[in-house]
Length: 76
Image (cartoon, rainbow, N blue to C red):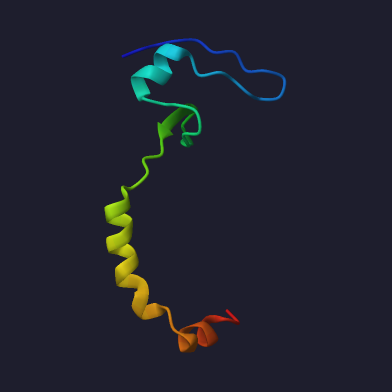
């Protein structure tokens, strides 16, 4: 397990050390989830689903994409 120390700035920001970024495969523009559990802060990379998976899911949602559905759900 890699361990590094990072300093929090006055704005609450920190730089994730390079060794940790490399080990977690974090790069510019990546999103991370920040969780806290019993005082322990965890960062986890948000994995983007691949395009094929997104297309397959989108195809199953088409049945909900009609003018009637839009009218039924509009005021909720």
